[in-house]
Structures are given as structure tokens and as C-alpha cells.
Image 1 (cartoon, one colour):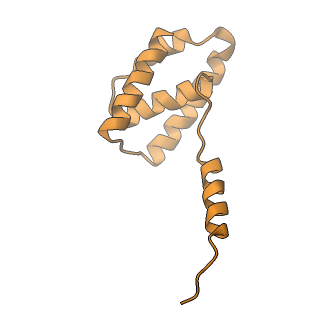
Image 2 (tube, rainbow, N blue to C red; image 1 turned 90 degrees about the vertical axis):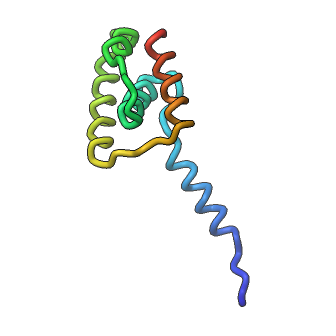
Image 3 (cartoon, rainbow, N blue to C red; image 1 turned 135 degrees about the vertical axis):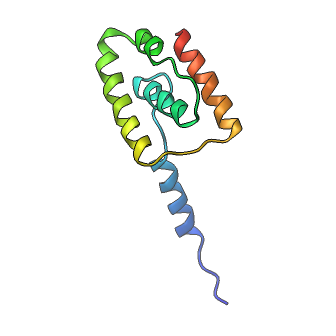
Amino acid sequence: MVAKPLLGCAALLGLAACTTAGPVPGSVDYAAATVSRGYDCGLRVDRGRINARVGRQERASFLAANAGYAVKSYKAPHACGSAERERVQGELAALSRR
């Protein structure tokens, strides 16, 4: 048996980590992604309240990002476990209080 170098795997794992990074917390894109994830998890999402908390300059960007995530989610829905569901629920609550 020949041992294969692990450098290729490490580089591949590093690349995978870079491509799976999501939106930056606190950004409009992050809020839209969280709303979409809430729908995926079957949570009650007060999108109107979250939209009202987004600044006027960022509202169009939020709505566009939200629509984009909704289309992606519709085409490839993702289930979520109880831990992720609780995390998303907490993030949605924080977004609606902002």
C-alpha cells in the first residue's frame, strides 16, 4: 500500500471552507439568509418586522437578497436539526428586535 500525501486533502479542505463561508453577521445579506433559513426550519418568521428594522438605504438590497435566497431554498430545500433550529430562532428574534 502506498501512502498518499495529505497536502492535497488539506488544500482541498481549506478551499471548501472558503467556498462555504456565508454572509457576514450584521449585514443585510446575513439577515436575508437567516430569514430564508427560518422558513427552511419551519419557523414563524415576522418578515415585515425584520424588514421594518432594516435601514431605508438597505431595504431594496434586503428584499433582493431575500428573494434570491427564497428561490435557492425553493429549488433545494434544506432540513435543519433541533440545534440549528434553536440557533436560527434566536437569530430571528434578535433581528426583529434590532
